[in-house]
Structures are given as C-alpha cells and as structure tokens.
Image 1 (cartoon, one colour):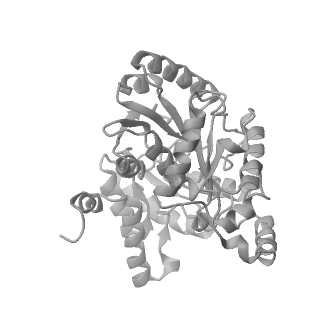
Image 2 (image 1 turned 60 degrees about the horizontal axis):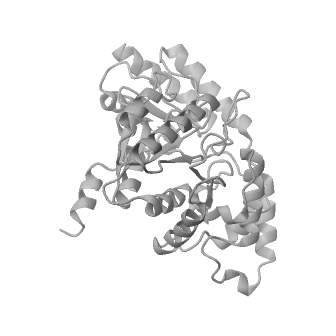
Length: 393
C-alpha cells in the first residue's frame, strides 16, 4: 500500500466533479473539444476585470527585490487594512485590519478556520446540498461533517438545523450564494439562524460558530443582495476568495474576517494566524495581496453570467426540466426525471454532455450544471438535453 488507508478510501469516493472532468478529457480526445459540452467544473470563463490586468502589470513593474521576502503570516498590514475597510462597508459593521487574515483562497481560509476551532470528534453542520470538499475539510482537522436538509427550493430549513445541532456541534457552515444550487439565504433566515445558534450555544454551554463561505458573494442577479453575516450573529466568521468575482481561481487569494463582536475574537485571530503557518500555507501569495489591495469592490461583468443563466434556464424549461431558477453563483441544480441521478448523468454523457450527479453534493435526484461556459456550449447542448429528457420522461 503506497498511500494511507484513509486517503485510499477518500480516493475511491472522491469528488464527482473531478471524475466528470476526467471523463470529459477522454471524450474530448476522441470527439474533439468543440463537440463535448462540458458543464462539470466551476471554472470561470468570463474575463477578469480590465482593472485587474492593469494593476497586475503596474505591480509587477514596481516590484523591488525585498518584495519577494517573508511577511507577517496574517498578510501585509496595508492589505489587511484595505480589505477591512471594504468589508466594513459591505457588511455594515466596522472591522479592523487585525480582524482580517489573508489566505490561499476560500479553501485555505476554511481549513485554517477548522484547524483553529475543531477538537477531535466535534461536528461541523452544513445545509445540504453542499460543496463536496466540506467533508474532507472537516476530516482534515479531526471533525465530521453533518448535514441538515433544506426546503424544496434549497432555502434554509431552520427546524432541520435545530434538530441536527448537538453538544458536538462546533460550527454551522453555510455557503450563500450556494454551490451547487445558486440559492441565496435571506436576511430573515440568517437572523433566525443566529438566534437559533445563540440559544443552542446557551443550551450546550459552548459557543457554536457560524462560518459563511462566500466566494460567489458578488455573482448575484435580479436585484438580489447577500445579507451581512456579521449583523446576523456576533459569533460569525467569513471565509471568501477573489477566485470567482475576479475570475482568478488559479491565483489562490482570499481572506478570513472575524466578527468584531465575537466573544473570543483575539484568540480566534491568533489561532488562525498560527494555523495559516503550520498548515503549510504560511501566508497568502505576496503579489496577489498587493494587487487585490487596490481593487476592493471590483468584479467581472455579472451581466455575462446573467445572460448565460437565462439562456440555459429558458432552454431547459422548453425541454421539460424542473428547477429553481438560481439568484446567484453560476450553477443550476435541476431535478432528474428518474430517481437515479447517476444513471441520468451517464445518459447525458452519451450525448457528450458532462454534468455532475446531485448525490455528490448530498442532493440526490438532481444534477449540477455549471454554466460558466461559452454561450455556444449551452445552445449546442440543448438537443442532447431534450433527447435524454424525452427518453426518461
């Protein structure tokens, strides 16, 4: 055995997203990339903001030799200040530079948070459907991921969450806008969730944190907005990245922000700064820190994703698919016309359409379509979507 037994087991049930991505590579080699309609991976295809390219060039041209050296593990103080000022405006509450830790993307941020707060055997509770990697992130730090069902439209079911919270619950982890559903959680539902967690924390004699994973925060449609997590619950922690709103996932830049009203804020920040180092991230990339410090509030052209969403939704509705139209992110999570979503996704694959079965996200009976693709990929895939629906409907 060349790898640990646990990792060998994880490899067997690893991400459906990656499995479909690998299947897609094989199909593209046989049929040509232009004839395979790949909706499997949430890899942004809208160009980064032009301001990002400009600032990147200016930053590279102005670098000095010392700018490549070590830095404070939480990030450059001026960068943290710039982020804190923006988050203060965005969240409607004042936070300081010391409340911010720069990280290697949102994935790095979540692992730093969980490393800091989890004791062995404790649980992280998340609404399902959920981002598939959460299972592994919790396990990385001695914890277990537990799920609570959502309403039929994927909004929060507070009763289900209440019943799922136990003395082992260390945090509730939400993702809004959500991957894979694109759903947003309303201000009222977040405030009600905050009240619930306050009550449960008192009941069990231990703070239950609310962690909000928000890399799609700026990708919202139809006049919607993402409510402030800090105004919803004082014991909250924000994790996010610039991967989606800047279309730079490969640059691995994000941050953690801790609520200024968190009871143990100072200890949390100190613990996360240490975790950032000892997990091997050490610090967020120096070049990207300098760049994003000058670009707070910018994003890609959201109108492009709005057009893609509408193009996909209109086409699938005409084919007979049922779904909740997403108010955010760039995913659609339709129902499958048969209970076996894996079989349905395989049928789509026969038409050279690559999607991901909902079971991989804790949402069986659905499948995920990532519509951050060329418009022609959407339109040319429609006959195949209709053919498979007609086969099972």
